[in-house]
Length: 286
Image (cartoon, rainbow, N blue to C red; front, side):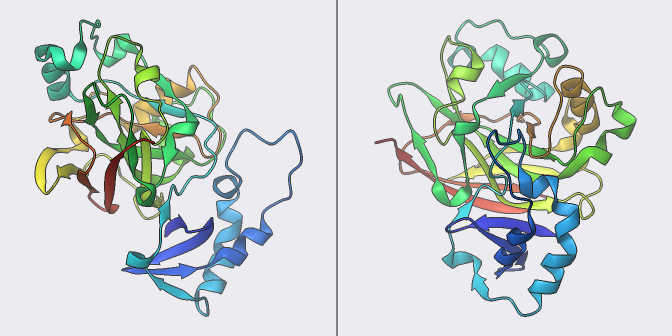
């Protein structure tokens, strides 16, 4: 199942190049009051809604994917967790290029650990990236994004995939400079998630996925997720040893080699095998 959020927070089931509008399924979500839960309600109750989504799909309105605005398929992640230098060739390019590391200490991921991005940085493919601090280098980083489906704490790697709701393409846009990663990677629109959520029953093995990004149709990054230093189960084990993971939390699994600068006016085309592709426009922030 491929689920998307589009236009004015509508829920869609993606079938080829068509979006089936199954928004009435959201009426079955539980009503919540302040204080709101630290999770994404749709992701938390996705298993319960699937039958309702399937029943609506037969008669639901249909729209062309090309004519809707794609929002992040996860509306309310409690945390966006990111894995630095999780591909060996990317570690090598970071160490070799001062324009990337700016004198910051660069450690392998086992020593560097994970970091957090602000949830306010999250947008969907149709909303685009709005670059700030354009006097500095802003880079693209394409990543496999893992969406947690149920509460997880101190999960063993062998059990970790059982806690996954699904997968998306992620962009971790980065301002280069001397500051901490979380600051430079958390401006508004610097986390792009999309174009839809591919549920875990449809993508059971994230370890052999081709991943790439093109900037203005020029190939910049191309690799496979089997190049990760710590694989998806290992990252879930690592993260859940420090944090309680909640439904809707997102883990960005690291970017391969080939990161490079982007400018207002650029068009990004990110693709991950068995998930799909998303085109994202770059502009200057107001």
